Image (cartoon, rainbow, N blue to C red):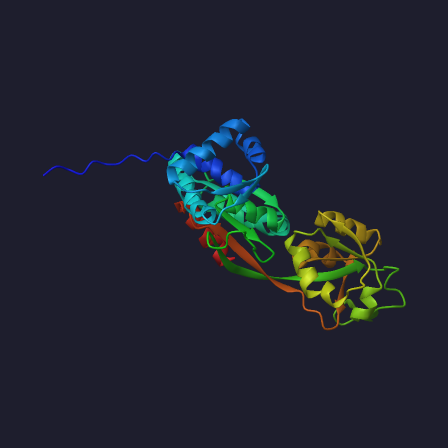
Length: 311
């Protein structure tokens, strides 16, 4: 009995990579920049892929490309194939202990370091590649299969939720705070000696200058959803990308701030800053673990999951 002949695929990884890049960026020109290919090579690869699949993936409207309904399911499969190919290509690195970790800024700067210390304690030769950015930016890198596991502050909102796995990790609380002898609280806020904090109403807080993180950060997401929605006329004087900058500006008495308890812990303990509690406001939030379903879960990946699950 003759063995069935094995059919070799005519679709290439290059064609799939070009398609994924066009799908994510929305144009052949941006895909050519991302992949360092000529625009004609990108257009040719897309045409070849559509020919092999015998279906359109984009509709050409002038110079614009609009996604065809066929594109999304092919995108899911293409991402999985490319992820597996990258895993195979870098298999020896995974065996040696390579892991790409993403973290939103508060977690990356204040919570992740001791967790990495535990990882190095278990695997001294671990090869860690760390990417710290806003929640939206980190989740976008997970979607592109550039990150193995991410720890983010805001609710993950991936463009492709079917390809992304997310799991609640731990709880954090945002705190409104001020300089201890702030001019903004003088004669306005009530001091609570027992809890060593000031107390304000929502109406009082809305009249004071507030320094917050930028749109796209996990911290800002909670501020928008759980604080500013009750204060439509709040005096938000500045949106700032760095938590450290907000702390320094509050210390200079430019206004009040709102950051994670982890960010201002040392300053509260030293007495330089003081918490401001607002009646009726709960700024608790959930932190999330995020990863791509197609990403290879190496032994070091599981080790890191075990470590952060115990934290």
